[in-house]
Image (cartoon, rainbow, N blue to C red; front, side, top):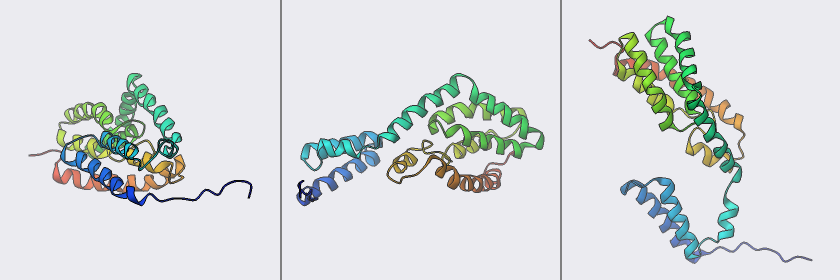
Length: 210
C-alpha cells in the first residue's frame, strides 16, 4: 500500500440542505416563473455555500464535452438564419410538396420545422418558420391556424440531435450516448408524430374552414 485509500464518505447531515435546495429550485421555476436554468444555479450556489458540495466536486461534475458541443452549435443556428439557409430549405420543401396538395404542403412545413429546430432553439425556430407558414397558408387560401400549429408541434420534435432540446443535452454526457444514437431512436418517433399530426391537425383546425 504505497498510496492512501480514498474512502467515499457520505455527508448525511447535509442531505436536508440538498433536498431543500432542489425543492427551492423547482418552486422558483413553477410558482415564481423563474427560468429553470437560473433556479438551478441558485440551488447549486446554496449547495456550495452550505458545504453540501465542494467547488472541486462541482467542477468535476460538469460535462465539458456537452458545454463545448452546445457552444459550437449555437453559431451554426445563427449562421443558418443570417445566410438564408433556412429560407432556402423552406422554398425547397415547398417546391417538392406543393404540387401534391395542401395536406402535403402542411407535411412539408412540419418537416421543415423538424429540420430547423435540430441545431437551434425551439423559440428561434418558431420565429423563423411561422412567417413562412403564414405566407404559405395565404397562398393556398388555407387556415393559417393549421399551419401555425404544424410549426409549433414540429419544433417540439427535437429528437434527432443532442442539441435539439435541453433535456437531450443533459443526458448526452452522463448516458454515454453518441450523436447518431439520437437520430436512430428519434427518426421513428418523428415519423410517428408526423403521421399523427397530419391526421389530427386538419380535424381540430380544418385546412379550409367553412
